[in-house]
Length: 302
Image (tube, rainbow, N blue to C red; front, side, top):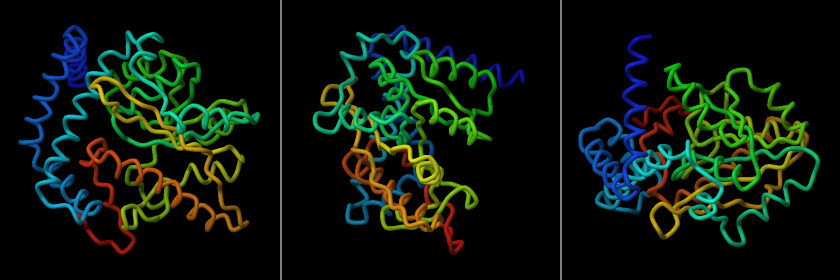
C-alpha cells in the first residue's frame, strides 16, 4: 500500500507540474520524455513495430519507426490533456474540440432519437480520455466501462477526473446488469473494444487482415437491447492542442436469429470502423499493446 501511494504521489506531482507549465512547454517536455521512453523501451518498441508490420506490410521499416515514435509522442500529448482535465471548462472545450463536419454530432443525435440509450463504440486513439469529457461538456454525458487500475490511489483520482463532467465510470467486472439498466434509462454507454481479449470474452474477427480476439460485448448488448451502436473517435486537428470528434452513422446490424453468428458478423463490422480511423491516423493508435497476442491456432506473434 505504501508503494502504491508513492507511485500515486509521483504521478500526481508530474501532472500538477504539467498543468502549471504553459501548454507549449508542457508539450515539449512530454515529447522529450516520450522520445526517451521510445529509445529505451525495447520491449514495447518491438511489439509496436510488429503490429505496424501486420497493419502496414507495404510500408518500409523507416516509415514504421517514424510512425511508432510519433505514437509515443502522441501519448505525451494525452498526458498534457489529462493534466488539464480537472480545470476543463465548456468554453475551453468549445475552443479546442469541434465535431467533424458531416460526420459529427448529427450522427449521434440521429441515434438518440429513440427512447433507449446509445452504445458508443470507441478505441484508444489520440487523446481518447478527452473524448467523453468534451462530449459531456457539449451537453452529452455518458457512462463508460473501464477496468479499474491496480493502484487504488490512482484509480480514485482517475475516476474523479473522468466523472467530473457528469460522466459515470462503470467497472468492467460484473457490469452487464448495470449496463442494461443504464440503456433502459436512456443513458449512453461507451466501450473501448480495440484491445486483445481473452477467448471467453470475445470472438475472432479480422483486423488488418489478421484474426483478432475482440470484445463481443457491444454486439451482444446491441442485439439484446436494440440500442443503436455509434462508432465515435477523437483525432488531432491541424493546430496542436485542438481536436476533432467524429461520429459515424448508427451501424446497421445483422440479425438472422443465429446469435453466435450475428455477434461474429457485427463485431467484425465494428472492427472495420477502428481499422479505418487507424489507417487514416496511424500515429494516433496504441501500437505498443499486444493486439494479436491471442490467436485461434495458438500462434505466437510476439
